[in-house]
Length: 381
Image (tube, rainbow, N blue to C red; front, top):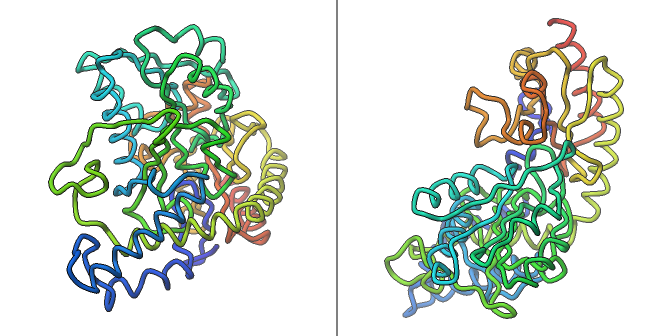
């Protein structure tokens, strides 16, 4: 996708709203503007019906039941609700959480906050390819462990963890499993039953839905997971997330989920072909190497340009090519990627790394233009 004469390869940061999603949303800003909690008239009923349909669409996308979907303002809120909600409700059982050093900052910052309140947190290391060691996970489990939180696919490298193996271990110890699937949705099949995930946050704007709307899947049987609410004041969303529902956003999230359910496989195949072309071209440039193992999202390339400051490189083509030095949530921080550092990437290489992320609107011409733009910029340095 190109805009302002610029090629967009930062789809892991956000995606454009699919036109079909936008058209589904528009009536709920105007003629169907009712409050979904208004139970006494048609306007409220129409809004409530729309929310119900969207809940079912999101549930279908991850093979859940609609009663297991709670709408939030986005994945960050969903992650906070999940981790802090588990810590509060299950504190009688234990006070230990296991997560991974390469998690999104939403997870890491939540855990750091809980540590100040007496919760013990183990941060698993990863190898040079970005994968955890399963034996280290087993060794970290104690009788006090109440939650294991491992993201399905990393937002910076695309590395996919073995969630089924992780959940099998957790289940044997009666431990709840959360997986931040925010980056995985729309790029790979995500089945909470097959993977054994108990809690799963997701965000619409990562799969061609609107910003400002997300959801949390909470398993209701085998095991039944119970959370303590973060936001109170009206009992909305089964008393877990009070506040007037964002009906247009929810409708958009539901439609985007419906489209992702139908189209992810084909989109992923297309993105993988383009990613392979991009990787091949980039790796022909001197001093380049891929960060992350082979089991990655089909759209993500995190690459080091040896001896090149990535921020300076990007400055030379920022108006022609949209890429990133890391997560959009941390790109303003003057420090190297915590993900790459955790993988053992030397600090100099971390400062020399760029993330390219492809989307369903990316074309071969976009890839060719991106490669040409990078080559030109490198020649200027």
